[in-house]
Length: 237
Image (cartoon, rainbow, N blue to C red):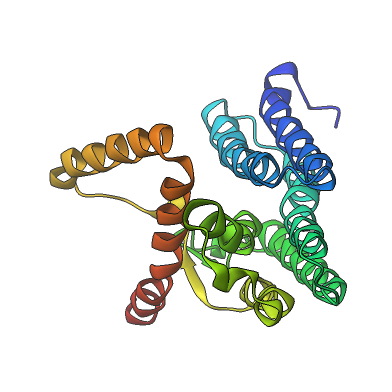
C-alpha cells in the first residue's frame, strides 16, 4: 500500500465506477426497470475490461488493484446478475429461484478466489491465451442473455417457469469448470487480418448504437460459440 501512487489509483477509479454501476443495476431491478438494470451490468463489464488495460498502459499494476477488481467483480457480476434474474422471476410470479442465486454466488466467489490464488502463485506459468472456465463478466452476460432476447424478440420461451428456475446452473458450472476459453489478452491477429477486424469493429459499434440489444446478443453468442474452438485449440497446442 505504501508504494501506491496517484497514477496507480487511476485504474481503480474505473473499478469503482464498475462497482457503482453494478450496485445501481440492483436498484433499478428492484424498481422493475429491467432494461436499465441489465444495461448497467453491461456497461460495468466494459469498464471492468478497461481498468486492466489502463493499469498495463500506465504500468501501475498492483496487488491492491487485483484484489479490488475481484471484490468489485463479485458484486457486479458474481451476485447482481443472479439477483436481477431472481427479481425478474418474482415479477413473473415464479418461485424457487433463490437456491440458484446462492449456488451462482458460491461458484462466482470460488472462481474469483481460484483466479487470485493462481495469479499470485504461478505468474510465470499462466497461459494468457486461455482462461480456465468462463470469467465472471462472461457469466453475467450469459446469465442475462435470456432477458436480452426477451427485450429484443419478445420470445415467450424465456418466460417458461422451468427454464428460469434452472438456467442459472449453466453459467454457474461454466465458471468453476476447467474448460479452456479464450482470453482477450492472449488473442493476436495477423497483419493481413487487421483491415477485416477494423471493419467488423466498426460494424459492431454501428449496431451497438442503432440496436443495442441485438449487438449484445450477437457479442455474447459469438463468445460462447468460440468455446468449442478454444477447447480444440487448447488440446492441439
